[in-house]
Amino acid sequence: MNLTDKIFHDDEAARLHLEAQRWPDGAYCPHCGECEKVTLLGGVSTKPGTYICKSCRTKFTVTVGTIFERSHIGLAKWMLGFRLMASSKKGISALQLSRSLDITYKSAWFMAHRIREAMNLAPEGPLGGEGKTVEADETYVGGKRSNMHAKKRKERDLHADQKLKVVTLVERDGSARSFHVANVTAKTIRKVIVANVSRKSTLMTDGANVYHRVGGEFAAHRWTDHVSGEYVRPGAVHSNSAESYFAILKRGVMGTYHSISEAHMHRYLAEFDFRYSTRSAVGVDDTARTNEALKGSTGKRLTYRRIGEGAHA
Ligand SMILES: [Zn+2]
Image (cartoon, rainbow, N blue to C red; front, side, top):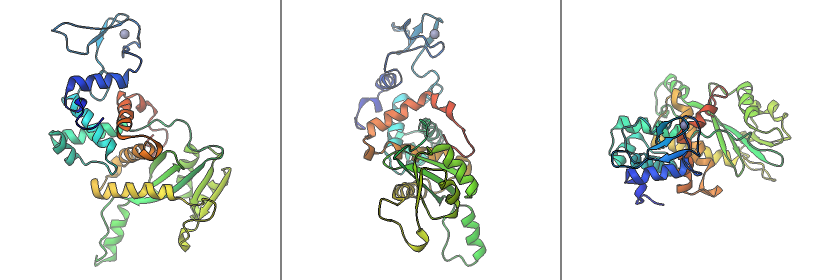
């Protein structure tokens, strides 16, 4: 399926596609959960795709209870928005989205954030496990780019403070989970790691002090000493997965979104985590990735939110 597909240009085709994604086993009532006594209503005066539930006598469509329900934007444009967000490795700006979909900037901005919510995957248990390796690393993104020619050191320090601190956990050959933390300390790092990584895993980090104690809580802890320029040790001791995640995140934040406010950072991290965790290298193509995001549009995943401070999950 590519951008010429009908679902991106025809609201009726888009609705049928959404039904197939949301109801793979047939329509069910969003009010009472009934799936047996549900009938599609016909007739010229009925809005296409209207069902009636004979258990609770309520009419519904596939958009009830989803992010599309109260939107004035047609479903085909929504499908296209999902597709563009899911397939753009470095993200897509609200400005670009507004031009591509011919909607206002405000609508595009709203749409992009709703799609990010849909991409906010509920964690399926901890990362890693026996015989698996999870890399943990931290970086600084966003804020204003520091000006190397700044006359006053004070100014540079100010810019550095605007950088947002991000901790990312990446299961090797698997998923990523990223967190915005106020400060990188042994305490904040530990909180994120133990809440998200199976203790049966091998933890892979750099040699920073913040990882020393928490490393002892895992089956094994390996690290490289970045300070002395050592990035790869024999025996797959490296954090290249986290490094490549950060490379994409930074290109996205700098090239596409330019800067991200602290209040929204967790949403953007969810977006980059989603695309990374469903990347083509793990066998997910653009169509499957888009459909995966669409499944999150029902709002069900949102009940899993805020399991921890700074957590996007
Ligand atoms: Zn019902």
